[in-house]
View 1: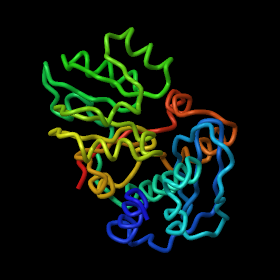
View 2: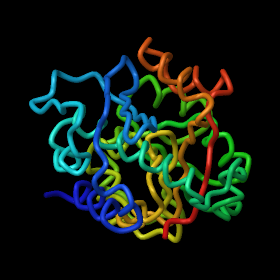
View 3: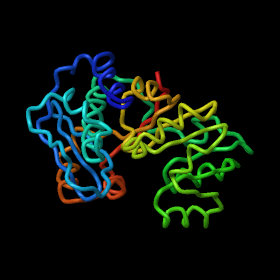
Length: 258
């Protein structure tokens, strides 16, 4: 097993032990997001353009079996993270403590003027928040169009593969979607920083799992039960995260990794 599989399984066995025998009741892969229904709760995660996976789960499969396939392919990894998202919804429902709505990220992470922030994955709103706080931002992003957009905002931007050449920073912020390959986790392990945060819809993971991956903070997305049917319908229709957020169907949350 690899580090992501180990973290998924360890989280299922420890803080989420109540759902250690949870099964995947339904799943799907849309244009932008995958989704998973686990114990009646919906989770989703970013899914990249990719060939059909070698492994396809089946309804009724134990989630722990799906977790074994994380990092074996982008679709398998996305579905594993979508399933963890569903379990995290259940945990929040049962009283899991998160800040909702969350404070502004720069404020929540204590980012001060002049500090260096490494951003793994493009997040326009977060870039603006960091620049407003006076931080110096370096972005690592695979999409050249998004790198150009970031440069227009006054940010240094490099291909994602360059991240492991970094030496040190005050803060590292990685998108949850960066978990689809090992680079962000290796960056957390290799690059010294006082704060290491996982943020975004694909970072809807239990804080315990975030800590196992080297993060100090995590911020994800909550699907209110009363909106779950609408969210699922839109996911099946191929809508993305921003559309769901603009429709007021989701809630953001933030927590310390512990």
